[in-house]
Image: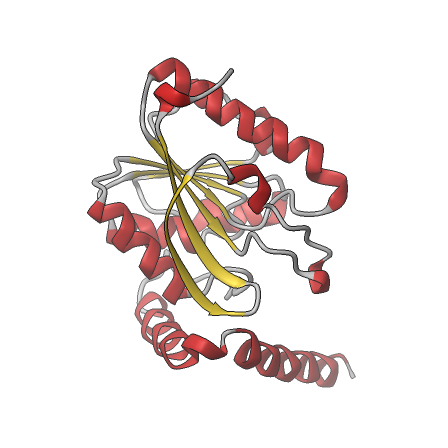
Length: 221
């Protein structure tokens, strides 16, 4: 009975995915097959699909951006099972930090991480950003519900303040910042109104990556 239920849910998820990513569905499918096959050949990269909210096509586009900007340090805020962190480790020269509060997801990510990836089991609100050598911060689904709004704003302000003290230009990459009622996720674009939106990659409704740049010398305290 459980197997039948899981099969039905997987089919439902597949149908939803085709609709949600319909603008880039061919590329989404291509990159999923390509990198799932590639990772399955390595004993330390095999991990659960963790497809929501970042398919490999999105992560590939992120890696291209990071390389073009020569970014040397990245923080994945809510890294889940490590799909984003390991991919970026493979495709960029950056030092990668991943933070995950869920113990089980952290254990999977930490077990499968590459040598230049540091996975930490910690609430992202408690991160000491000043101690990290990073200039790029990836929001991959954390703190999007209404009850998390205050924490989200605290987190953004901590990043702002740490970068202001360092006088560094930095980047924020938002994956699916738009409202998504299926997951009770609120819109989070409002917090980035003062940033320079460099580019957007759109795959369908609520499925997009937004790339922001911020100059620390125009930051307010």
